[in-house]
View: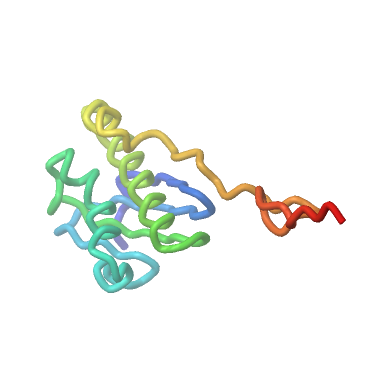
Length: 130
C-alpha cells in the first residue's frame, strides 16, 4: 500500500474534498476515476491542476481525491483548495506561492437559504394593492 505524504481537506460551496498526496508519476484520481474522465469541462480540470503548476510539481505526486457534495465546479474548487493545503503541509516552501495565487483561502460564498413566505432567498411574491 502506498504511503500518504500529506492529507488535507478542501471546501467550496457545499463540496468537501479529501486529498491524499503520495509519491508517484502524476496521476490524479477523483472518486476512483481519472480526473479528465470525472470532469467533463476543461476549465474544471485546469482549476484542479493550478496548485501543481504554481509549485512546479505537475508530474511529481499521485493524488487520490474523494469528493462529495455540490456540483462539478464547486468540487473542482474544493479539490484545488485541498491540493494546495496538502502541498503546503508536505513542504512549507510551497505555502508562499500558493498563498500569493489565492489557493490557500477557502471561498466563503454559499447559497443563501430560502426564507418562508417567499419563493426564494431574495425574490418576493408579486405585490398586489387590491
